[in-house]
Image: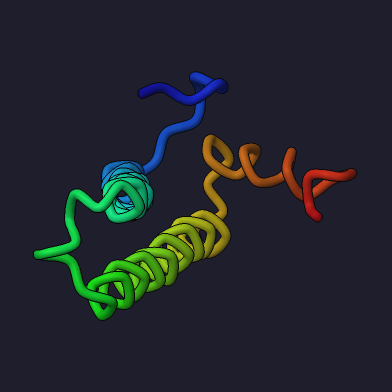
Length: 98
């Protein structure tokens, strides 16, 4: 996976990619589980509390994803590295910020 701006690099990119991949996998698992449950394929092995566990894992990785992104932003802001700072400077202007 590559960034759109090839000048930008990140030390946290691997962790961000991992967190996003787990987040996507959990969401896909949740949707597939719901579809199979509605088709009565998983009625013998699936219980209601397993949806709660999948939702809890999704929430945990959402918080972890936000934490990693904030850590990336804080490292760049604290070090004030010119080769990394422009990535966030572009996104803090105009409608990107909201």
